[in-house]
Length: 168
Image 1 (cartoon, rainbow, N blue to C red):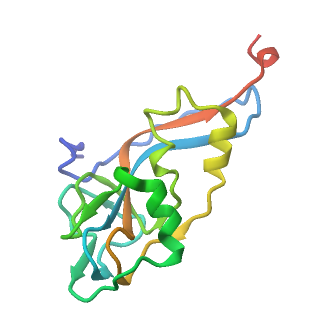
Image 2 (cartoon, helix red, strand yellow; image 1 turned 90 degrees about the horizontal axis):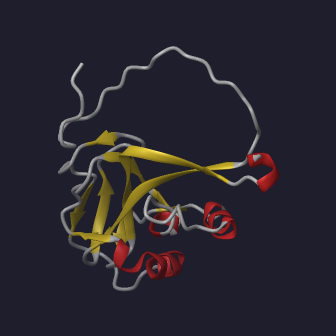
Image 3 (cartoon, rainbow, N blue to C red; image 1 turned 180 degrees about the horizontal axis):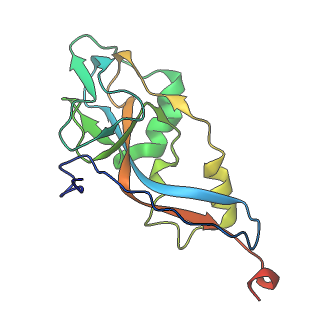
């Protein structure tokens, strides 16, 4: 068994037997750090890594070649605005962080993350948790269209809200 070293190797985990006791039932949300990669130029994109695959840094996720389209599709206009500077433009299709590959984006990646959960209001969390998933661009793509996302292979957070009576 080789553990993950500096995000260079794919991680291996040992599951331990145990039990879970239910004290209260609550609606909860899993929050994780996710990075969306966008087309750094107009290009033609073909997926290389399988959806859900655990990858290390520097692995080719998509192949990018010449021959894109000049304008972003209406499907991605709102996503591009929401992601803004948080998205990582790529012209080589390589992952810059380790994690799980996804070809679905929703725009919540910039809001639902470790840095925001402590201050997040319930209404904001519910709004972004209900965001509609959109398949990332493939084939002919315009600059800034989302190509893929990497869900970090690290800590994930379970967020839930309880009323003051439940806490007592």
